[in-house]
Image (cartoon, rainbow, N blue to C red):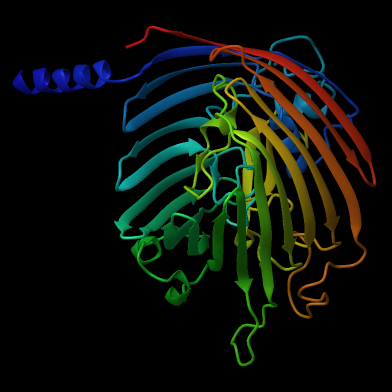
Length: 462
């Protein structure tokens, strides 16, 4: 009885000190676009997935417990089934079946659900949410272009005289039912975070066809030196530098480097980016309602945490043809996502392959220019991307003889440009008006205009 009372007192004290309760939201949206209407034999791409998730969920509901140092959240997002989106219902986010006006909700939920804890020493997160590393729009390790990851994430930091040392460790599991075998991505990074400089080293290990053991899971080792079977180890260096209102950042990420005398014949494969951001004006961060999945993203702590005001950025990315690749499908550096689809690709389960990090994958050169404006009530971004895509794809043959140059894009090269404008306005912290316009110009021309109104209701506050 005493133990029961003690547990009850602990629960009550937590609830009284928390900002907790139930929430319910709606975000109906309409779209005018010329997206292709596909038949049931179509195999969707990761770009289709990104287009689908550029729409907000029609409705959402959940419960949250949060305090000064912790947060636990369970959130159901009621989305249109991706089959309906691909087969002609992309004019809205209404969850109705593609061939009728009956209700049909994407049942692959929740996409956000996690518990996290943070203090001056560490940050811990476990559950399901999007993850992002670094200050750039994309990253070769982890990017929030992926809607969610099942993960465990731990950050440590220790103050020194001129800044702090940091160490991060994460584990991500992909859906093991797709290949009928487990796939686990383990990563860690270590570095120094000063007032105007941040530098570090990152290493990842993709383990396929087997579950990781304690040797794989040990945080304080060099994954490469385990020489383990069924492992694909990548590593990289990154930097950030603040010079007044100018921020510079970059990464060099290596899959393989062919060295004379090396036992492997895998070709050199790299990914790298360089970028800069200039703050034109200062301002507050956006305080709109939490209606979008990426608002729950866990982001690596960088030099550039404040996002308010007007900023302009430029970033250049390059991925060589053989980046992320291996000769067997399970070893490729991809993150397949399975959907319980209604009627596409033969019906039943649908699998869309994406990447853990850079969403365009290997054999790509990308230039990105963006202007953002952010205040307490307004968040907007104008973005232009110029993409050069080589002819080599992640599912093409990987093996000797490696016919393409390790660095140059494989001929023929496809060029395209994407321009987008997103605008969010929040009259208060419970409402948002959303406007979006985008266009793709290349081998095909696509356009999309979206408008939506969202509102969150909070009740039964603890």
